[in-house]
Image 1 (cartoon, rainbow, N blue to C red):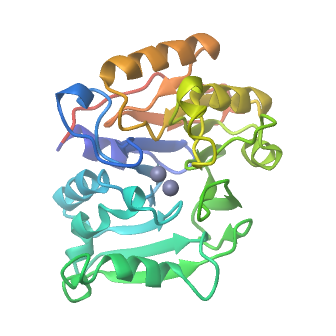
Image 2: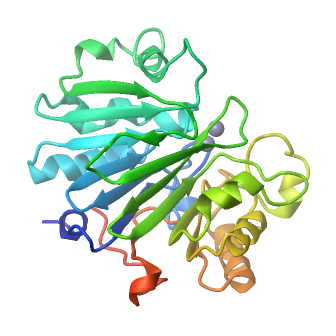
Length: 307
Ligand SMILES: [Zn+2]
Ligand SMILES: [Zn+2]
């Protein structure tokens, strides 16, 4: 058994949320020697809430998660919460092994599209010619597609509580707040802070969360020429985390041009600005625990061997 499988199996109900980062790069996969430490796969984060598996986005990182899940031999039963359907967030889905397993049950959730468009239509478009071979015929899993309106709480009961909010991104994107066992994780990616500073709605949404995973694509300097592109900065992330009294801040959705050396510089500057800040790396695993139980608010990141 690999380190990954132990991690996935180890969190029992009430003991917090195990968070594993399978893809942390924004916009485009960036493999290569210059990005090997932080990772080049696009967005995918697995949350294990007791027996419940939630998957945040299906970027190229989901391929590794699929391999690890398939290796367990246990049929997958998971909810995939999509922030939106820009390609960096869905390009791994055709390579997610459980999609080809007839014993798997996968529920897709999306709330960024205006009716009559829906998440099923958007995903199927990306799974058929001329973008792909017609994968509908190849997928064997039981798939279901669920549209919702931003602000709605998702009916996953009795599974983890999942709240949603609209983010500031071209074509819309959804932010999620997941609560389980008294701990909460907010997944806020592909959003831009307002010119005035902090997005007040978002601040309320993430208020007091134990872990905030946040879009920190740009440096302040880079942002000047990318206003309106729908992404934020590490400094805005720290400001938001302070204003919302967040426990652990995790920087995410790294810009493709940022190599490991630059990421080290950003990580160091961010940790100086807000002590304890983590910069997501592919393979990183942390556990969200409620701060009011005397548990570790900022548990040290555990990094099991990559499978
Ligand atoms: Zn993105
Ligand atoms: Zn996007």
